[in-house]
Image 1 (cartoon, one colour):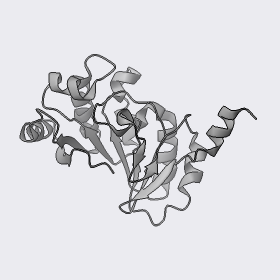
Image 2 (cartoon, rainbow, N blue to C red):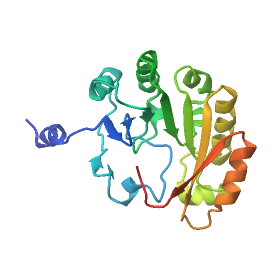
Image 3 (cartoon, rainbow, N blue to C red):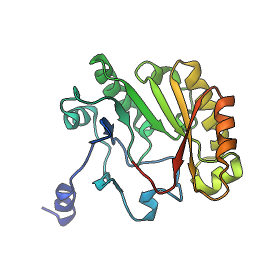
Image 4 (tube, one colour):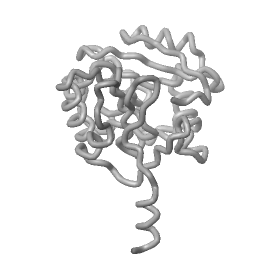
Length: 209
């Protein structure tokens, strides 16, 4: 067996992990952003000592097997160190199964799914996702691009448009920003969130998970 294959098999994948009474699902290692404050761009794929490094895109049956029995989980949350909507078919399939079991579903996202997929995916998400938490992270485009380093132009406006559309589809939307990032005005971020019809949550720099 090649050494690289042995290493991949020795690495323990965490497709599902549990924190705070919730089950979190790690379904991709790809991301739309290259946030300067993200642990993976600072040498670590760990959240609360859980290694979230993936080397491939898991399938829906693998994710469901990793969850096991969700009966004790308060909420199912799509949230890893990648952007869940980049593995959209798996997200939708897994969420549909869990919703049919009566589990509340939340998506933690950068809000760029419509920009990446070139269409409005919020109607599809709304069929299976009840709540969406969107990382806004800055009150203006220049600061957003500085801290989040998006791969595509127009990301700041696209994120806000996604938040607005998600709310219109009936999902409970919360925008978040990180207190401690240079130049970020938390009060201004909260005002933007409310203008989009969303709630707001303040996060703290370097507190992950």
